[in-house]
Length: 321
Image (tube, rainbow, N blue to C red):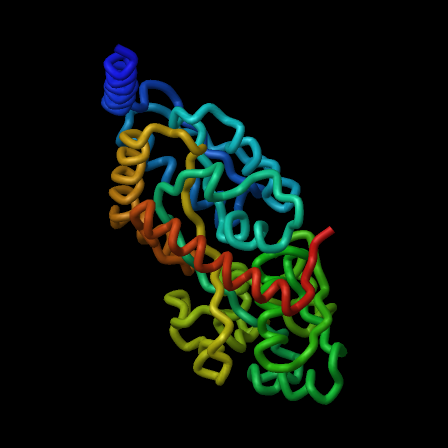
């Protein structure tokens, strides 16, 4: 008798889940963004969200909840009802770096979140003021080795993916740099232009206009392939530093417990959106490429990067208060 009731209960849950997926969404959907408007993650949410609104006939609301190195928005999604109506556009830093860097994390990616699909991927670059003496990565490494810790390099903040790249570069080349953190990429760019710092590690999209007018000079791309924004920029790998491999990527996640049929629907529609020529062009104009994936492919990337980043953090002594 108990077994029969149990089986019926499971069937009813499955039936209800399937029915909810067939009608999903029947009201507005929120996509939380852990950062301020205008950044890579925000743009990803708005571009994809606009397409999903077209498909669904319901509004997709992008809600920026910046602060706490991304923890505020991520924590809110973890606590949200797992019904598919609250999602998050996370960065690689939110799911692969923060867990490696922060000792007391308020969420566990594998336990609390369900991957939906990768969205975009953009290179990170080591860039110099054009009036600085640095013409190549080799110049920077040589100067640092001759006087360790004397070279100031700006980053958008302590605990950012660009900060990790800087520490990783130092580890890989046996050098030491002085990280100069700013509050965001915009202030770093302005400091670099003004000569406050001679070098910086930044998103490629942040520096492209200033490279085009000759104000700044890209010395190296930190991913394994050259940037579509400017294929003339050499990679670090091409310059003898194969270990460093990091980029600014974004992906969509849902709270754990979201019904599988809803996850399947979300994955199908996000992948469809990323295949649209206008969406691909929108990302390409900012130097990013779309990276549609299955949920399992996204989960594998996150876990692989987390393992690598944990090693870099441990070896470098990088930490965040």
